[in-house]
Length: 191
Image 1 (cartoon, rainbow, N blue to C red):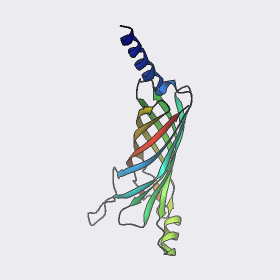
Image 2: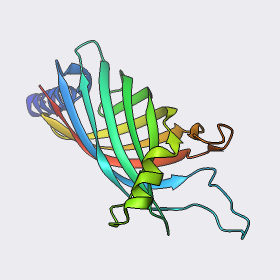
Image 3: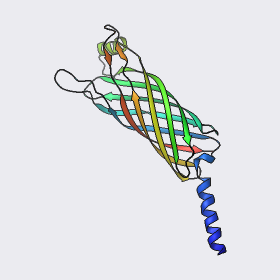
């Protein structure tokens, strides 16, 4: 009977200790692994914008009160185009008090604009930088983390970005809808 009680106590202690809600301080880093335009621009020939890869990072710092601050910076390549969509976000998130897993809900805001691929064509670079105004973007996101050992967890995130205001400077009415969804993978270190 003593062995059963000690085993249950040890298992419970380890499980509760690895629960992220007991962390005093947490730092997370992640990378985007996939992106999709939710309402792609459609052209007269019937083609639509599609993504062709994404790069960047997600950073987050969580305080002992389960609130955290974060920053996202990523660049999404538009398929069959010189254009990339460069986005920077600042986030506020909350870790739900769920045992065993780390469940996070967050909101963010920032800016986005077109950026040109480096092709050596100076006219294309000038056109890209000078013909579009930055748009204001917002996002909501969620992340679920599984503790591997008490000090860190691996997490998967999903971001839904609303980005409808990258505007043509000349017409002022031609707004590009670059809304997207992004999945990410990362690690959180708990102190």
